[in-house]
Length: 172
Image (cartoon, rainbow, N blue to C red; front, side, top):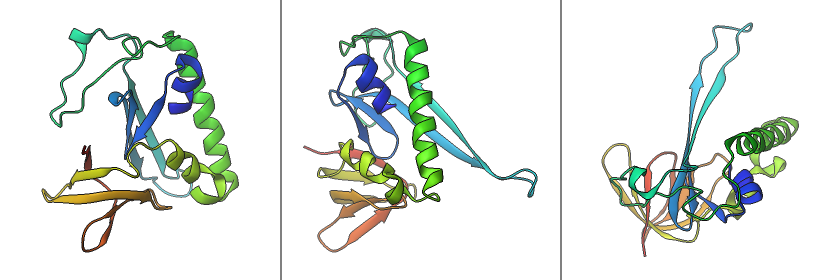
């Protein structure tokens, strides 16, 4: 999605771990993925991906975010293109390209270049963060990277955490 927005809308789209797309520091999109188990060899497992992209929402239509991250749309951010058809085609082409690279590398995010591309576009890495964990705890520290399994690495004063899930707040 970041590639499609950068190329077509000509905006600096950045990623916020784990699943948000930021434009000018505001949330413009989110991605959710869910594994679906297969029923056996004839029906292998699958991943269902859902994408929400704010394309032409006006300021009064934007959703409120309880974590405080402001929302935006491509139109509000000054996109050069807001036609959904080319945006969707660009997204699907990019997704197909990265999926093929990943498959050709045997599912290895490092060998396929996927991890390096993610890190290059990630606005979270290098930032002070507060992570709200699924069990209600919080982690505070510096996001230092994303490991090959997609876990966020957060250096705290006492340890480096490998976080598979959580709501990340970028701190100033």
